[in-house]
Amino acid sequence: ILNVEQSPQSLHVQEGDSTNFTCSFPSSNFYALHWYRWETAKSPKALFVMTLNGDEKKKGRISATLNTKEGYSYLYIKGSQPEDSATYLCAHIPDTGNQFYFGTGTSLTVIP
Amino acid sequence: NAGVTQTPKFRILKIGQSMTLQCTQDMNHNYMYWYRQDPGMGLKLIYYSVGAGITDKGEVPNGYNVSRSTTEDFPLRLELAAPSQTSVYFCASRVTTGSGNTIYFGEGSWLTVV
Image 1 (tube, helix red, strand yellow):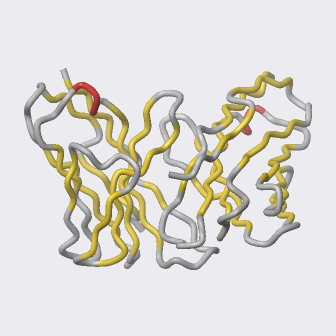
Image 2 (cartoon, rainbow over the protein chains, first blue to last red):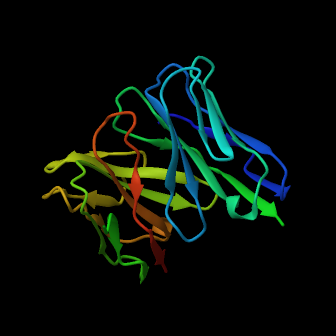
């Protein structure tokens, strides 16, 4: 079992604020890192797939970076909107490539 | 395109009863997974399958069984239900081990054991 940790556990921000959160994973055993967005009463949907140290991905106002040497990834949201409210999950895939190990998620609430 | 379909969506079981959570996907994915999600605990892998006829244990397999007789279906069996199995269960699939291939989740099954 590989520990994947996310922080903070929850976050409340005002509309228009920018925010970021962290996913930490074991750096010794790495294949890929995925970010998922999980809205209440729905199923998680993929945001980003990251595989190489130094990867940066962007989708609209959301971006992510990856540091495989130190075992962390950051997710950034610029100018948060109420529709960004969701739980953001990261998943670490070790070098077998078969299993996904999910963090507990960061719950983001954007207050209008 | 249906994607990953789970049934039932909600179920209440009595302690000691058995049931099967059904999962089917129509994307011809070879990898399928069952996760459970407990409050504040994130998603924990119960069982997974890399193809028809092949299954393997995940992090929390005790109290569950699976089978994979076809590519499409991956049912999860609960034998002798216990209150500790009260949870939300997610079935998921992906096409291959390629790093770029993400997981597709079903809508979840809410199970309460009383």
